Image (cartoon, rainbow, N blue to C red):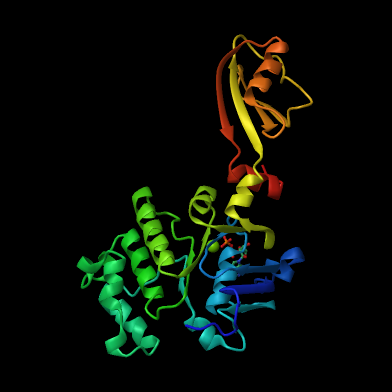
Length: 320
Ligand code: ADP
Ligand code: MG
């Protein structure tokens, strides 16, 4: 499918805001309604696996639901595949397949029927439908004629992925696809997603799991309280985690936390444990240990770890 505008990103979000209507009779601050998105702007590059990361209540589903046409934005604009969601809603919808956070199915349809109905909804002629191919792609060929209500949670999730793809959109969006999904199913889902991405589909997924985003996504945007607080290639975001942590167990006890100007943080972890955070560009673990020993501590055990995205997130949001 050609983009509505040459060189347009797969998705463009510009100063998007959403204030939900207040509950009836709400007083005080609540009477204004919840500001779920507060002027968010970012682009999703074509061909990427883009992670929209943020804690529960950050505004991720609100943003996805605006793209899906399920929630009306308050202000700002959004383009999908070059099509403005207000001016070209039909074309915008045709360019995107969305797997919602909540699983909803009519329990009396079979997976095959679910896909056929959805194809009908998009006016896809019988000859051009991909129901069988998609069932095979999401490993549900053997469940073709089973009632949806008999499928496991993971199977339903995979069926939703197939359903989102019946009209062959160039963009696939998954809202918290692995929340409540076990490790094995999560792995299967990621294989499916990376496979589709390899075939050219731009993928957007929301998650509150940092590790997941770090492993899968080539670019990550972070939102918190409806505001965008980061938007970088995953590599750069991880690079921001310049800090390293040395955890040591000392002989005897620790009356107080050891201090040194070169340490960026020191934390006691029990009677004999201490964790020292340092900048790996300015010193190394050996130097940290030498300083501790100079201060009269006898080090018994040592482990080190790199700061991960979790630490970066804490740094960026000022939480923790
Ligand atoms: P996330 O998907 O990141 O967990 P949501 O977009 O679901 O976040 O929610 C963002 C904020 O908007 C939350 O405070 C949530 O309670 C609120 N919210 C979500 N949907 C509605 C709604 N329909 N009416 C009022 N407030 C809502
Ligand atoms: Mg959500």
